[in-house]
Length: 295
Image (cartoon, rainbow, N blue to C red; front, side, top):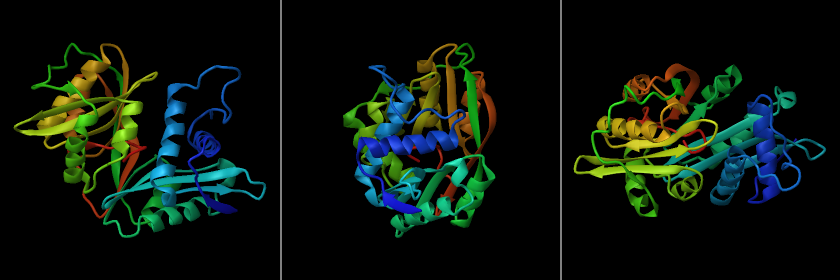
């Protein structure tokens, strides 16, 4: 087995997508683009851009594992953002599991994060993933997801102004990040708006932001606010933007996010178990909804 850095190239991004899809999706989507001029679906495009973004900003934290024939069998993507290290992806092909591939990849990523006081990762509901992350020193906090079709009938109006965000809100978002997770997302706030809708709120009581991604279902990709009241305002507005009858998914909710459960349940969403939020050197950030890709 050979480990090498993920490069900021399309073929490496395709390799990352192939391994991630084959390891995490059922059924996996093909590595090659669709035939002819058919465009890739939006989620696949986001994954390709995500891999190249992290390969560009954090080459030391992104690694591919290849077998003797040069075929990709595993991948890890991670990032350092000021004093916080985030694990964005760890995936190994089913036929390559049990050979130490995942452990070797995670070791490289953890070495890249050495010196960061804090770490965060969304851990999928798989016993091997939990075991690997726990051995790496993460505290595993059981997570809940909210899914279903939005009912706006019982959803109250936001208690304050929520506006469309843009590049001018970068300082606001970085400030919120530092308060909640000890490190700003920084360049991630340049990548996320390429694929997600940004909502912000800012008044005398504080500030916050929320990203929404479109697709077969609307996802709350990342949300942070300086108070539960403002987080409730943002999530309420986000579900209103999604619209009546749209399918929505919100993941990575720990026990500290009761405000999010209240909003989701009021909108008719259903709770379910969804793995863990893994943390090192920090308490569960609240009010905060992490992103699997940009935790």
